[in-house]
Image 1 (cartoon, rainbow, N blue to C red):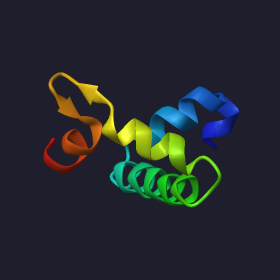
Image 2: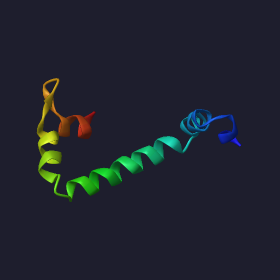
Image 3: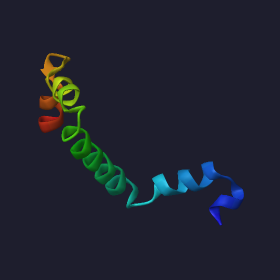
Image 4: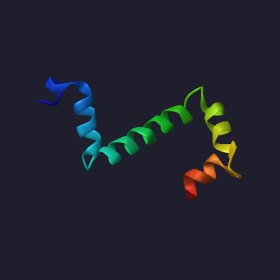
Length: 64
């Protein structure tokens, strides 16, 4: 029914739902696993060691 009002309405309703955060986090974790085990692994790990705001991206992910 949300699609009748437009796809943006359906997307907005999805992100306002309780499960949206969990689904997005799961998708990000799956994408990270795929990239880390692909030919892009060197770029992935170099990005983790990149320094942002005095800390590595890996540190930001681990400790927030």
